[in-house]
Image (cartoon, rainbow, N blue to C red; front, side, top):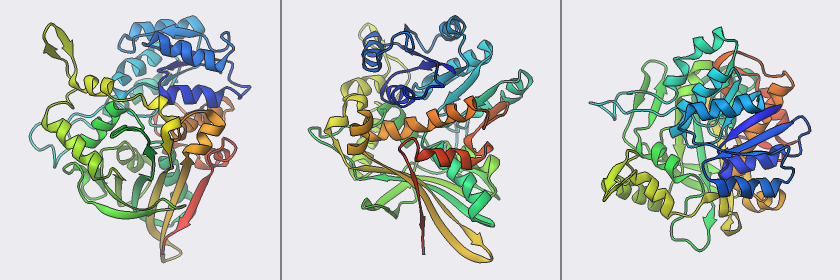
Length: 402
């Protein structure tokens, strides 16, 4: 398999590192806007013939198409912030190759009732073009990271193997991670974090469809396994709520994230000051997006691994019935930062995201997963994926909840 990897930040680097030892990976073209970064990652990987580097502006669809043609790639892997999804997604379609991302095209809040009704939903742009991909015989897998991705696969597994009837599927994410030496240092892309945390969260219910609530709504305390413990989680906009109901029968879908009071306070302040704005404004003689300035002021998550300590947990809480009796199960994956740094020299949050994409490549390459059109992870058999998780060093767990 030959892959064009667009974006070699923390997750992109981790993807390449995890894929390096897979003999069926013939070539990964490392492409990014940051020339120094692609050289850094290539030097770490060695083997410049197998890991060639190319400069690319992910906003320029024609440049991505040119690279896909130059290297005759089988798949374009989008490891950029979702701001660039449209150009990369459309480039794959025009290039006639498979496409995969870990976050779907962006949403736009409802202009009049943003905290009640959906405007443009996450992934709408991509799903509206599914028929075109089908007609061309092409496959786009959207949302195959950890959340979305692994969490969605857990939902499909629960439907197929653990429950007769599902009342609610709730993605619950929490961590006890600390970053030493910084008062504030997000361990994932701050650009993406601002987007998903300050947009109106989406909830799906069988009788109502998709609707929104105010940011940080419906706080609850969830107990995470393996020593992480009880953490307050709140509603956050996330792709699982847009993906799961398309393939899994249930009555309600939510996504809640453990942010903490400090993080929520900082996000609210950024919003109050307009620093979450992703549209460029004029500063003296320069056009710059305030959100890009915030990102530039913070440390790069890709280089925080040696300062991080703790575990991060991603998982899917399913409530329903089995054999006529109530049942609750939490399917989860825990990544320990010390272990990820020792094995991969990548911090836990990016490694936990990256391994899922590589398993997806594996299943496509070996014709275990097949399809055409625009599909989410729930559209495929979850068992082969889950069987490979331990092989890749990220085993899953199952906890029955009384």
